[in-house]
Image 1 (cartoon, rainbow, N blue to C red):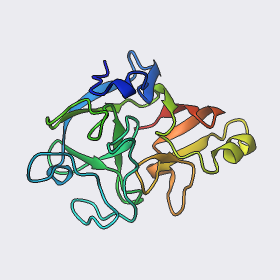
Image 2: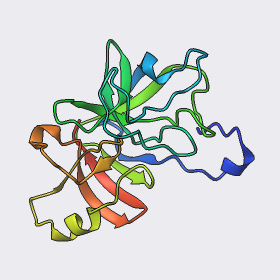
Image 3: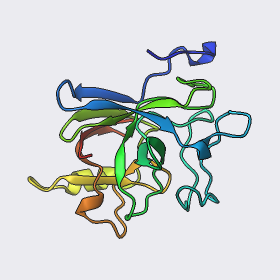
Image 4: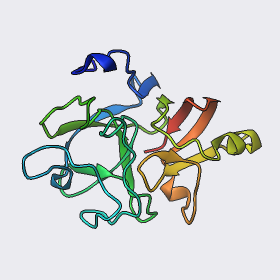
Length: 189
C-alpha cells in the first residue's frame, strides 16, 4: 500500500504492477546503499557526477524528488542496491518496488527496500518509470519471434536504446506498448 504523506498525492499510482508474477517473481529484501543517504539520514538522489559506488554519466530519473518504482537497480556491496548507471558491464539486479525519497516516500528514513526479481514474470510499467524515446518505433518495427529488448538507461529507467549493450545486458522484453504512458514487459532478471 502506498503511504501518502501529502494530500496532493492521494491519486498517485504505483508505477510497477505485477500481471503474471504469482509464482514467477519475488520481492527481494534489500537496503539502499549508503551512497544514497546524506549524513543526516535523508535521501540523496544519484547525480551525474557520482563515482561511488557506480560511476554515472547522468543523474537518476526522479518523480517529485525521489526514485520511482520500476527503476532498474544494481547490486552494490552486500545487500546494498544502487540505481543502475546504464553501463553494459554492470548487471541489472531487478526493478525497484518502492517510491524512495521526495514527497512520495514509501520507506521514509528507513533503508529497507524491495527489488522485484523474476525471470519471465510480466509487469505493467506506468510512465514516468520508463523511457519512451524510440519505443514506439521499435515496437512497430518488431517482428514475430524478435522481441524489443529493454535495457537499463543511464538514468536508471528501462529504455530500448542499446548502445554497446549485448543480449546479456537485457533487463526485459517489451510485450506491448499500450501508449506513451503504459508498457507491458517480460522481466529477464
